[in-house]
Length: 170
Image (tube, rainbow, N blue to C red; front, side, top):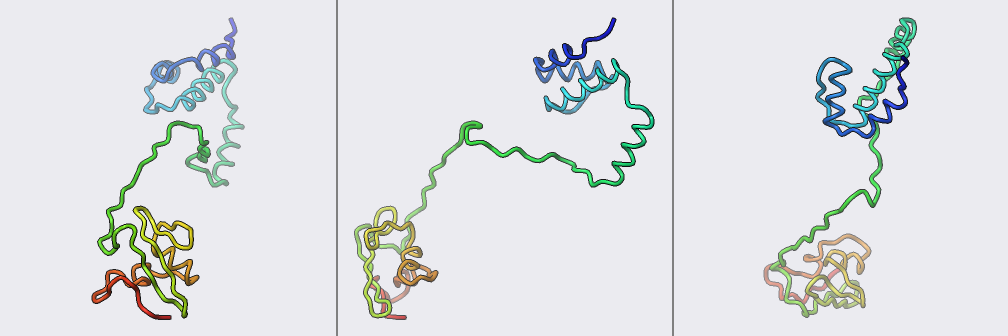
C-alpha cells in the first residue's frame, strides 16, 4: 500500500514541537537537540519522502558534493525584518538626575555672541529659546552658533567665578 506523503506532511504541521521531536527520533533513529519547529518539519518530511519515493541517486550526491566544494556556503539564513506588530514593545522611561550646574527652572540664561545677546529660559525638562523647546543646552548653543558647543561652557555654567549670566566672547 502506497503512503500518502501529502497527508503525512499536513499532519506534521499540526504537531507540537515535543511531538515533532518524538517523531524525528522514530524516523531517524536518534534524538535531536533542536527545538526549531520549521527545521524539524522539513527534516521529517524529507526523510518520509525519501523513504517513500527513494533517495538521491549516487550521481546526484556526487554532483551536490562538487557544487558544495565550489561555493561559499552560508552558515545561517538571513533574518526576517521585524514588523511593527510582531508583539508587544516595551517602552521605558529614563530619568536623568538634574545637573547641579543648572539653575532652577524659570531662570533665564543670557549670552552675548557676535555682538548679539541671546536669552534662554531653563524649563523643568529642557530649555526654551526663541519660542522653541530644546532638550539640551548644547542644542541651544548649536542653534545660536551653527557649530557644536558644550552648552555648559557656552553659557558659562559650572565654571569657577561665574555667576551664570554668561560671558562676552566670540
